Length: 337
Image 1 (cartoon, one colour):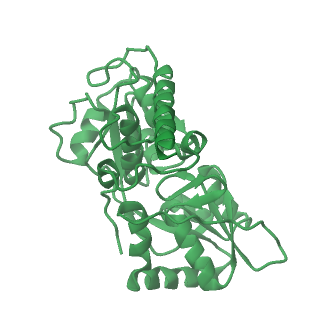
Image 2 (tube, one colour):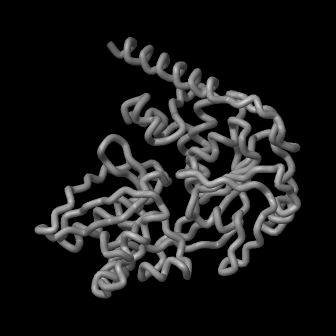
């Protein structure tokens, strides 16, 4: 029986990789470092922080008591080790914990959380359950407050707006503290240090001599509109590409394209439709490792797919890569306690 299961898993992996091959584009118009699109093309993260950001939660402005409770909870979960334990589920050797959402009911005492569950490892779905650093924090917070947890999944652009319209109590979606978002929410204390990072194809060598964010930016600023860069819509990556006075970002001359999630952007990079992608550091590491493992099937028998949704459809939510060499290399991220 075990042999049959193993064979079935192996066949599923082959089918998944075959599907990836079929998605490739034949467009070969990119400059040095991009090359022709191929199913064997892999991606790499340029390990230079392009920004210095702080993640926080966005609380309904008309609920100052909740803001105080959230800040107290952030402090306590750092002091008692709860935050470190949750991070270990995604950045260490721990196991992710499924979080269930109750049905919205105005007659119940509920904590309604707005999120965009396409931002692994902070929030994502498998089946009907939610996973991720933010989702486990949401569950712990709801338990602490004695409330039933309701998670509302929506486009990232709508997360802060839904809280500002009092449809949700709190936004928990890997939110960077930014002045324009304060129009809709009151930010909590910071709970995580983050940054943006650049993703390129593995054969790209133009950033090999870069030491600083300025070095990378000079190269990107020199590119014309014939080059293409992708980002997740509504994130700091978009502000970096399109320019933002608050951040001090100068608009890139490249043609920029927004995607609903980072996985789609990186997939388009490997398909030859983009030259660069800029997204948050933790998802960048997770996404590139997953894609590369799917292409470079190695002795670990690593079975990964492009997004949590595709993973669920093909492998029924089974994380076969857990605790393999590739998995241990995925989440070497900087945590703030």
